[in-house]
Structure formats: C-alpha cells, structure tokens
Image (cartoon, rainbow, N blue to C red):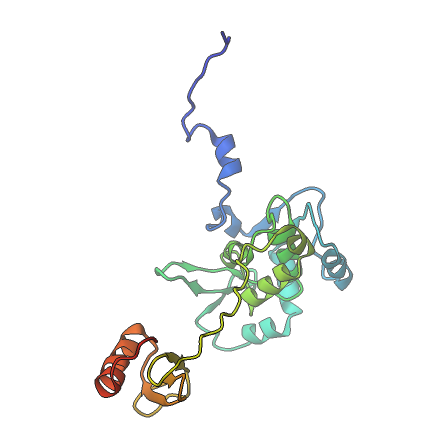
Length: 264
C-alpha cells in the first residue's frame, strides 16, 4: 500500500538528532580551556571595557543571539581593572587556591565533591553581565534555563565571588522567564481551624523551637508540648530535631509521666 522502506538507524550514528535532544549542560567542552576562547553566534556582540556596551546589553530583556569573545589579553586587561583581583595577584606568596598562568591571568583552583580539580578563570565584575546574558538569555547557548542548570553550566568555566547569588538575581529579574514560565508550585493550602478540646489531656500540640545558640552540653533545640485546653506546657532541651528524639520525648517525658492523650 505504501511505497517506502523503514530502516533503523543506531543512536550513535544518528548524531543530528542526539545533538538536538541531548544538549550537554553539566560537563564543559574540553576545548574550552584552550589559551583563547571564542564562541560565536551571529550577530556578534563583542565584550569591551566600556560601561556603555554593558548597560546596552543589560537593557535588552530577550537576547536571541549573543556572542562571547575574549582571549587572555582581554581578560588580563579586565582583571587589572578589578581591585579585588589585583589584591589577590599582589599577595605574596600567592594563596594556595589560586594560580597565575603565563599570560598573567588569574585562575581559581576548585575541588569538586569526588576529588576532581578544575581551574576556571577568575572573571572580573566587568565581564559577568555578558556571561550571564550568554548562558541564560541566548537562544542557542542559554535557552532561559533555571537557576541551578545555569549555575552548573557556568561554574566549570568561570568563577567570581557570590556567583550563585548573581545568577539567581539575574534569572529572577529576567522578564521573559517571568512572563512565559508559569509557577509549577502547588498553591498554599488554607489554614484549618482545630476543634476546641472538651477536657484536659484530650488534644495536644507539639513542635520544635530552634536552632538556638548551642549550650555547653551541645543542645541547640527545644521540644515543646502544649495542652490546648489548659495551656499546660512540657518542654525539654535536646540535641537535634529528629523524629527519634521526638518519639523518646513522648515516651519517657510525657506518656510515662502524664499518660497517653486522646490526640496529638
């Protein structure tokens, strides 16, 4: 009935589809750590030391094509204009978690959870707005991902102080994200009134208070139990706020002394 031939293509050979459906976000490209960086997406927008270009880029809420282009010379110039980076470079001896390469560019030594060590470039404040625009607002490289996915994309490539906070602030202030991403969080439930108890020891309420300043014995929480009818309170200082601690408190400090209530 149909004049066609169905032919199966293995996943490893179907690279075009894999490139579109399996876009990597966790591990950076190994070529990123070459002596120069050039990622070009037309139309090009170059990073320059002028503040006018930065303000112009920030004023655009939706950037469909952003180019990130800077080599070691440009990064060196921007680092020299940053007082915080200059203070680190001028420290003798250089702190153990920093390294300077042959181009006098400062790198941050970062050790991951499983012992992996990477050296991302220490990015000055003058370049961070453009990097945020590239890795969040760009259609091809950013795609308006969330806070954590954007952070994971940037953290192995660049480093600067308060990086996660800056990424969070940039994404929360993105107009496109605010307009087009509906909240998937369930609405808050309504408070339900509790029926007043008719007698003593009929209905009790219990909760933790803390953490508070730690005592000499290491206790930093209070567990508080209140009789809703008489407002009688039983409280005890404890080390943690786990369910095991709550169960022991109920058994040894409440049930074995006052008896078992009708409801908690």
